[in-house]
Amino acid sequence: MKKEIFFQLNGEPRRVDVAPHETLLDVLRGKMGVHSPKEGCGRGDCGACTVLLDGKAVRGCLVLAMEVEGQAVTTLEGLGRDGPRALQEAFVEGNVFQCGFCAPGVVLAASALLAAHPDPTERQIREALAGNLCRCTGYEPIVKTILAVAKKKKGRKAKPSSAPSRRTAS
Amino acid sequence: MSIACEFEYVRPASLKDALRLLARPPEGGAMPLAGGSDLIAWLRDGAVQPGLVVDIKQLPELRGIRVSGGGLWMGAAVPFSELMESPAVQKHAPVLVEAAGVLASVGIRNRATPAGNICSAVPCCDSGPVLLVYEAEIHVATLRGTKVIPAANWFLAPRRTALPPGGLVTGIRIPVARHAGAFAKLKRYRGEDLAQASVAVRVDAKGAWRVAFGSVAPTPIRGRKTEKILAGHKQPEGAVLEQAATAAEAEVAPITDIRSSEHYRRLMVGVMLRRSILLASARLVGKGAAYGINIIEEDAP
Image (cartoon, rainbow over all chains, first blue to last red; front, top):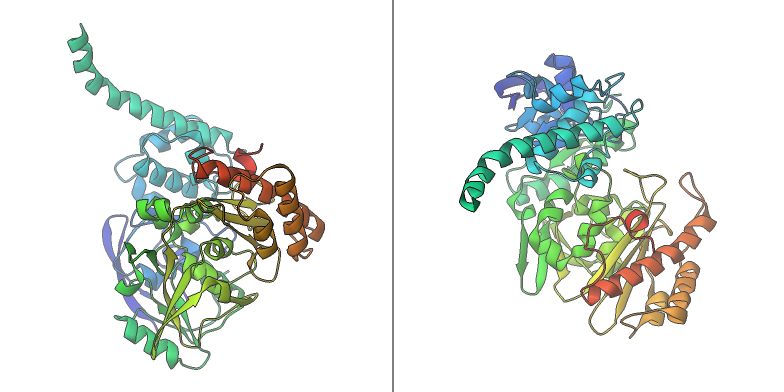
């Protein structure tokens, strides 16, 4: 039986009629005009359908639309609403992706990682992206860019806090 | 491809409501939904066609992680990533944390649960060997009351468990005791994959070992013969270690399938057992790599 569900999509309250067998991915792409999540494998292996559900990376193809009632869904469209983020800019600058099919999922998975661990190790980055398959790049430029963005952010944050201690030392 | 079969979806307000729905399902049957990583893939494949899907992950009785009465209790709806981050689970069930770290990917672990993993009960289920070496209790609710099923009695055959009809797993309890352990999982490549073979070991301060295997029999199995050889050896090495590996290779019953040959599985069970034992016995005396590593890739001696 169809039912109207209510949830936050990219920060905005939205209502939509869904049937029980429709996945979140079906509804985002087919009914809500959100096309960044892609259907790759359709069984949770490839990560192309990654969306954030209450801030956590999940598989849009393995979530029924009805399950997200009352929750917050973020897609790539919602990430850069106030202009592209540093991570997105760095991906563009480095021409990190080729075909781009995996890119929305990778950006979301990396954003969730950086939100939880602002200064991740390379191992943490590889682990966070292990479920986002990319057939073009060999992953190296993706991992290096995330590392560089995290380092840059850390550098910016470290400066103001280290200044007083330098003064004390002199 | 989208889901072709039609079903109803209900998010019950209470455990009682959920049990009523599961006990008196509509035509086609009712299936509980927690993380959905298996269920929704099966719905897409048409492998299951229930008339009703009961979303149980919001039920308060199935949430939370508690340590009480000498046991670590983990609600059936708690996903792997939440368990991995829990200090109580890290302290009392570190082997589960280690297994979760090599299970699927972050995007799956954010939804999937150990309870769902053992209810799917495929032979390669990573939670199986861990719960066997912890002698975990599976807590089940039915309309008639609650029931505790030892992990050892849980797995009956591939995709068949001791869950009674209309029953729902509410949580998993692991007895709290000082111990060390390790989990090793063999995969075809780095990143996410199902296990070609897996080994879980647990040892206590007296040198009593528990050993279990996954993906090398119709269900996860305990390695009783291997355990007997190791018994009393806190730091097994040399001949004892070799005898244990030989016993393990003999007591598993792997098959050849798309992921591996029977011969390779058997050989690797011995290799993985040796590494797991060495790591667990080092951890027992405060040495060895911290929990949460990939033993195959990161602790190769």
